[in-house]
Length: 425
Ligand SMILES: Cc1cc2nc3c(=O)[nH]c(=O)nc-3n(C[C@H](O)[C@H](O)[C@H](O)COP(=O)(O)OP(=O)(O)OC[C@H]3O[C@@H](n4cnc5c(N)ncnc54)[C@H](O)[C@@H]3O)c2cc1C
Image (cartoon, rainbow, N blue to C red; front, top):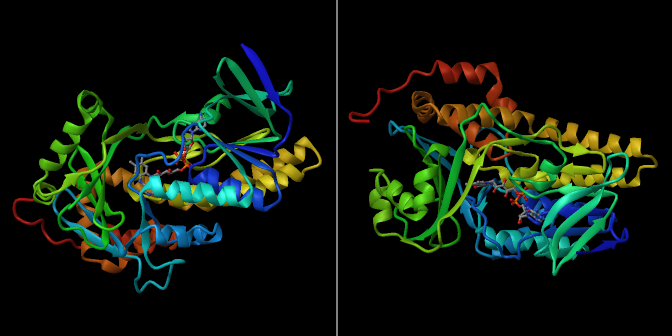
């Protein structure tokens, strides 16, 4: 097997051309760096996702010059979220509310990833980044000190290809090769492991302007959202214990699960599934830290917990923006020590930016995993629309997480008098 090695034609190699890779490449390229994006897929590629973008994600889309394209592609507009608990209690939070916070846009957007991701990748391309699709990275290259100096690609026609650059960015998603090769990937042992199944339907009954989450006792939850006119994304998340039934026949499992929910059965009865059922998981992983000498992680490669609060795309876009700025400093550094300090600063900035959201995300997921808790909180927030709006604003990325972590909010939540459950619930 022969070996081909690229001289340092690029300042940075971004592994992964999803939202985090596109956002990082865009920021770096605009700052004057020469960037190569490598993705093993050929776009448009499908991605198991509920496809909802928080209202604040539009700020980054706008900065990247993608917002008009996303809207012209027919993205649906979402007014807020409805969460239905196993006991039938349903809280509704709106993005436009009286709490005094407003997002860049007052609606969330929803668009198929086969449409969204190529738009984002084209923004990186238009900014000047070189993009190679169908290029799978298998390892990182290191120098004698252990510093990352490039990547190795999956051999093609018997030839191993090595590409070198002073900075390698792992934007390669949930099971990031870069995070694993750097020894930074950690699988969560304390949170329930879950798997997800996603498909699109036409004529799904009763869809309105709100995204919906239906939590079921012990068997997971399903999210419903209109993505483009007449098309509904159905994203189901079930315990990893269902893996065997899913492997046996994921389509049968998915359709049976929906038909078995009394509140969903009539809505799915007249619907037609128009895409194959995609599966992904188990998830709940995070990187010990989001950098190593000569490398950094962003998006799901750095942290992915659970899609319930649906903000991974925002975190990927915002994370890319943050990393881009620190990575430019890293590339301009006079010494290896200074370069490392810039990446360390990125890691700190990421934690400062997302810490509050991580706490809220984990609290919500703990409640979702324990039916009595989600039943109680949904009842409490059903009768306190102001509090539900605030929480949905936090998940929409425009209300600071601190608003719902304040003692006053928590006290009100825990001491909220709740109506008794509906008969038969
Ligand atoms: C079921 C489910 C529902 C979700 N719903 C939502 C939602 O509604 N809203 C939301 O905001 N987020 C949601 N998320 C999360 C969201 O999908 C992710 O957070 C987001 O895609 C992260 O973007 P990324 O660019 O980091 O990774 P990805 O989008 O996964 O992109 C990674 C890219 O890296 C490429 N790649 C991987 N390995 C290699 C390799 N070795 N070499 C080269 N290329 C490689 C892949 O081909 C891919 O294109 C959901 C996730 C799941 C699982």
